[in-house]
Length: 199
Ligand SMILES: [Zn+2]
Image (tube, rainbow, N blue to C red):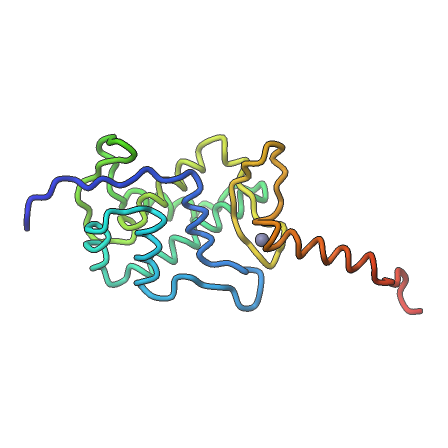
């Protein structure tokens, strides 16, 4: 095996872990939309969202059970932040699972421009998702945790970081859920809704 120098993994955005959690959405409906249906979907997502170097992604792709592990991690992350968005602490088993994945992720050995140098990792879901795991850990322990929200549409389930000045953003986006709710309220006002039972 060639003696490889460490790989440089770009530093993740604060909300990368939420973007990963949102690869499944319409979670409150009978048929949620799943974006990660096969290992290739996961590798494409990682290459694009995590901006992993292509040779690193190719190396990590060799692990067979990457997808199942990655989806389990995604659900752990979703549960953690759905809890904090409702003002609850994440469940102990979810924190333990996140910590175990963090321990299995490559260590950030050295700061490099725009990223970290890590040792050349063995193929694993924790290695592939290292930037997601780092962003989840950083978000959980810093002040911006109070800005993590879950879309007010119960069908949606989308997690996001509220960057609005007033900190009062409620919807994943007005076009996807906000307008739908507005239109629904408008409809209820226009409709002659009976206020009493029977009649
Ligand atoms: Zn939404």
